[in-house]
Length: 332
Ligand SMILES: Nc1ncnc2c1ncn2[C@@H]1O[C@H](COP(=O)(O)OP(=O)(O)O)[C@@H](O)[C@H]1O
Ligand SMILES: [Mg+2]
Image 1 (tube, rainbow, N blue to C red):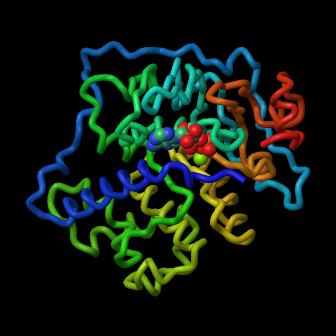
Image 2 (image 1 turned 90 degrees about the horizontal axis):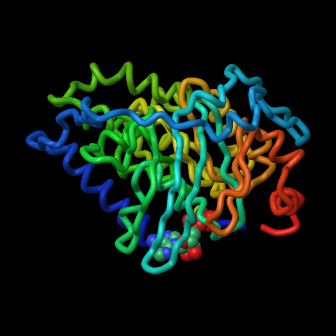
């Protein structure tokens, strides 16, 4: 079993940051909502050579060998069109290097699954894609993470804007202690220059809840406390809250590990539906889940990216012995 129990400092720091943002958002005098500037137009965009292109991966790779057939794919992600290109990413906590120079592609509109044994650095890698890793006091990060060819570690990056463009859903559902409506409206209010009326927010709130597959369950009860929902609903609400910011990339760190099988199936279905309109990078310890939903997969071991490619290739015909052993369940 994998878990994030070994990373409380990061979670605590992130939750504190979120709580601070929340207070700012409710403060009408706050000026931090002014739209950010992500990149300097004079900077030259870096165009990454796709790592995956050499793999010859055009086909969607969903393996229907498990209990339920995977939902039909609407979209085939082109491995040469990258939403995210990670190049030479090194992360250390104190004197201990956790990621040893990772190169990884996330094709636009695809579902990329990160798999590997517990402690290999999956969460660290995922959190480095929207700069949450650096909330850990001892973290040191080197290398590039190109989001649409702009390095998120470059100068003048607006972190609030980055974290809206690259949203994150955590292992434990973490709705804010407020109503369903206010949870979803949170990011929209935060981006608005003037406090919008509830009526004006409704279409966006409805759209985000629709995309998260929750609207029909909650539409008559939007004032209910989010904390009174079931775990599966809370996780879909967290997805809706993230979607309300209209992200280009959705990061998910074992989003189903606290959920029952039925709620897990709902979220898997949702991820497949969302692919295409955005790019999903998901960490999962559940290989069956990765096979069901991913079109690309990457295997990480002791901080090294061992192998990446179309999910079918990684799971059915891995090139490396360690990947073969891992997918065969010999370790992990
Ligand atoms: N904030 C932190 N401070 C120090 N070490 C950390 C921190 N977060 C993670 N680690 C260490 O980094 C390694 C990789 O952890 P993690 O990225 O959570 O792996 P995974 O998600 O694959 O289980 C582990 O050895 C873990 O103990
Ligand atoms: Mg983890």
